[in-house]
Image 1 (spheres, rainbow, N blue to C red):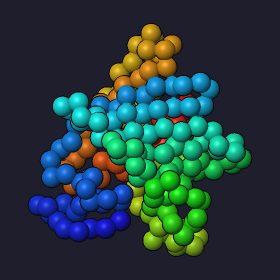
Image 2: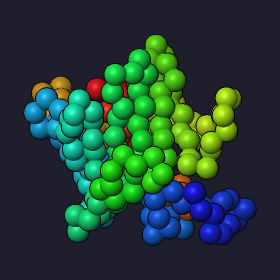
Image 3: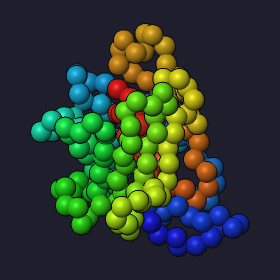
Image 4: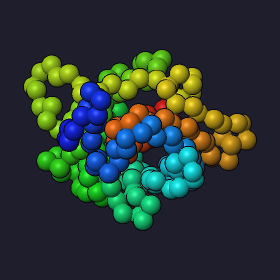
Length: 191
């Protein structure tokens, strides 16, 4: 995470890139489509309908793999879920990179699968404290209970067709690609 500056006393949260940190509140619409049993596709638009990001992927060697791309289709990051664990863990790497642990943007863990509300812990790469490590960020909420700080709009017809829409508000100077990645991971953990 780079803090390239301060705006009115609030640090810039830059995880993926500073070009994804804007000086105003960003309203986004996330449209999700399910394609088959394990393929998911997300399109992220600004309030004017301009495509900002795309996320797609499928099962890969018994792991979920999602790749975030810019509007031109250039890979920005790859999210991989670790398999065969009682808890869900994701690693996020820049671009469409391999699973090289030296090349990581952040890691997300779901500490317990038994929560009513999903709780995710986010660790940045410089958080290497052995033993008790404190997460750099927490994400709590649930799309299914509508208690996450995002609007989740769906109807029974849209669920049957495999389509869902999310309205998301990102605060100024917060990396909206980072927030989108966390939303995708939260959604993937719940489905």
